[in-house]
Image 1 (cartoon, helix red, strand yellow):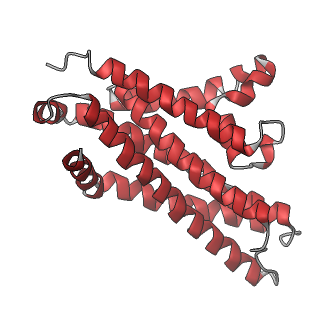
Image 2: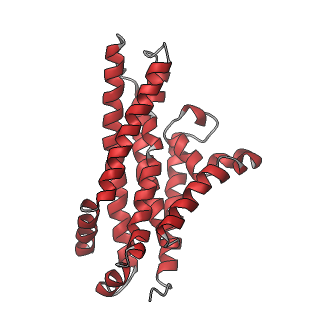
Image 3: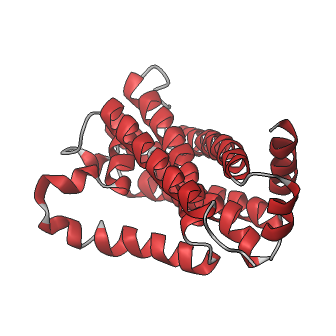
Length: 243
């Protein structure tokens, strides 16, 4: 397992798409924070600062793609056969990808959180105010956003194992978030609060998630989704013919 983890970490570090995702995410964070700070007059209020920092969680879409690329990317580049021939059993391969990319999602979120906090602090200083670093709600939002990034990276690994076509997996995931959670979910009442993106919003304490579950429940439920997708992905992977 140590060798698998090392190989997966090396693959992650040397893939240009990973660094591109990270760079674009930071740009979007700065734009998002700047948009909140420019549009509000009460930038010193805890609610506005929390709303600006909460953009960290929205970057989870990038870590979802990152997780999908971990599995489906090997099928796309036709390296999966060599990977499975190197390892007697397929389950450890998926587990190694899960561990490495969940940690990567965590680090992805942490870097994004630092950029968000720095951008907010710079804006606030320029407008004669300061970041309320003593606010518990602010740091709970930061922690929730980082955890959301990690959870979606894990879910992405499971999705990539289930749908081995990388473009198809990404398209299906984004379609789910846009159509099912964005439109159809409104027809199912309170059940919509327990769908993945809604749970992430509650975990991140987004202003739009006021009717969702408490942060700790959202975290547990989102972790449950990650486990379910990975288990389903493993069950599918061990039976799939890749020749």
